[in-house]
Length: 357
Image 1 (cartoon, rainbow, N blue to C red):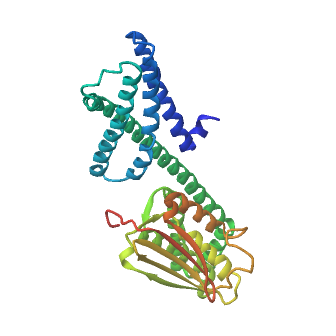
Image 2 (tube, rainbow, N blue to C red; image 1 turned 45 degrees about the horizontal axis):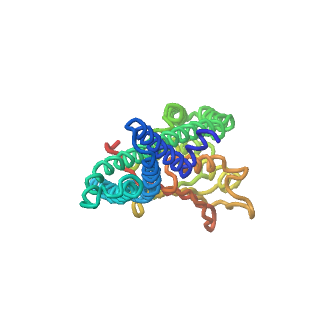
Image 3 (tube, rainbow, N blue to C red; image 1 turned 30 degrees about the vertical axis):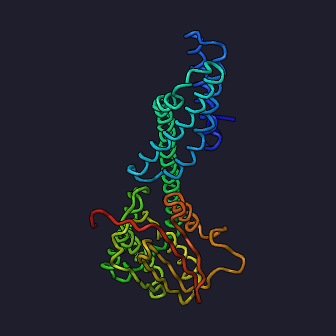
C-alpha cells in the first residue's frame, strides 16, 4: 500500500497515525523509566497508560467529526471539556495501575488528590492530540479543495477546447462566412458588417475568457446572444427565440460558456433538421436559494432508448462533468421531455456578484 492509498483511506489513515502516536508515547515513557531507574514493575504502568490513552482518546474522533464546520465559539469549549473528561478517565487508569503494581499505599490517604492533579498534564496532552487531529483534517480539506480546483480547471479548459472544436467547427465558420458573403452580394453591407462584428466579438469572448472565472448571468446571456445572432444568419426566420429572464438573477455568477453548449445541442437536433425550423426558449430564475437555468426546444426530442450524451450531445456531457466538479452535489443538470421537444435544466447555488457589471 502506497502513501497515496493511505491518504485516500481516511479511516485507515486515522488508525495508522493514532497507533503511531501512542506507540511514540509508549517508547518515550519507557525510555524515561529506564533513565530515572524506575522499578521493573513500572513498565506495567507505562503499558497501561499507553493502552488507556489509545482506547479512551479514539472516541474523540467521532465527536470531532460532528464539531467539524461549527463555529469556534462552539468547538473550543466542547474540545476543552471532552479533553478534560477523557483525561480524567485516563488518569484514573494510570493512578490505579501505579497503586496496583508500584506503590500499593502511595495514595491511601488522598486517593483522589493525585488523580485531579495529574489530570491537568493529561488534559494538555489530549489537547495536543485534538489540535493534531484538527490540523490534519484541515490540511486534508485544503488538499481536497486544491485537487477539486485542479480538476475543475482541467475540465473547464477541456470544455472550452471541445467547444471550439465541436461548436465552432469549420462548418459553423463556413456557413457563417457564406451567409455574410450572401449579404454582401445582396448589397446588405450594413447587415454583413454587423455579422462580422458579432462573429469577431464571439470568437474574442470564447478565446479570452478564463474557463475558471465565473461571469455574471448578464455577461453569459450577452455572449449567448452573439452566438445566436450568428446562427440566425443561417436559419433566418426558421429560428425563433423566447426569453424568460428574471432581472433579479442577472447578477448571479455562473461558469462561463455554460449555456452555449446546450443551445448548440438544441440547434443541431431540434432546428437544423426540420424544414420549418424550431423555437428555443431560455429561462432563468431563482428558486429556494438556487439558480435555475433552462434551455427548451420544440423539436422531436430523443429517440426511444437513446440518452443525451451517449454518442450525441457532447456539449451536454462536458457541461455536466464541469458542473459536478465545480459544485459537487449542490448542482443538477436534468433532461426533461416536454411535448413537444426537450427541456434541459441546470440547477446550481445562487451566488451574486459583489459588484454589478
